[in-house]
Length: 404
Image (cartoon, rainbow, N blue to C red; front, side):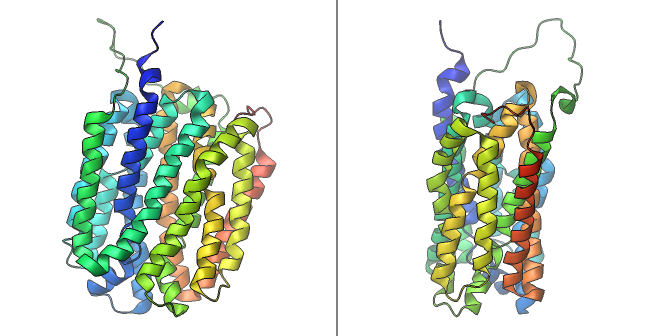
């Protein structure tokens, strides 16, 4: 008996998704090491204002992405997830190139908003992989995809730290747009999605169904939404202020070292994601996510008291090992908790929650760091993550499948 198209192509599509997510994330994270410097070039001179505008500019992309992610997830369920990835990669290529033409801080923020509105490749790839992969392999596949995403997060800041001094900040943005365009071509020509079912001739339009009404137990899904938001909050509350934090530590070659520190987290997550995902397939995703959240919270405390850049890089690496288990675990728990027909919809909401964390994280980090000092950012983030881990420990549903 011939396997369904989804079963035949899921590994090929996983490879395309990993490549596409890797290249688009590189392009999106290139700006992290030099974003405060670009903000300064655009006319912002006050140090506290530079920190705050850097947070606003970085978080702006994720604000519009959070608003549109459920829409893209719903449209992907209806019209095909490959189409959503084609849209995202082409839109991001255009928006990223335009950012290199910004002439003031307001244009930069506006173009970052546009990038979030048009983009979302990595989140769309997560939905496609989660819904196409056999459930028994979902943790492993999502771990592989998470490794690709983290590899992009690893490579992007390092490339940004190297390219900006060599070719200039604006040229770096143009190169980023070109890189995303390569992902667009790969998705367009290499991905093979299973054909969408054709409506029966003469059948009326199907009645609208409330996606939430189809979920038997909503509690695991809701808890994962909170975890998804806090995961990205914990990462992004820190990363936009790292350049300024390193300046306070009297670091030499700040731009390059900022790229190294940011990449340390991504490198560790890349190394751990597939291994932790495979372990979670065996012992349960809920247990693994709870432990990973607890470990990440504890590792935030010493980051507030480092005395040099290498201590910070080492602690960010250890924290990345813990964070690597969160992304595949969150997606797998949601995937196992909802029917197939609304999986894309619910994973879209999960992506929105991650984007909300990516909005609030830079805004909170920029405000707290600018007014109360950098150590306060680490302490506040630690308290939030520890509270979430404790809530997960207490609120674990008794009837949850052990594979979730």
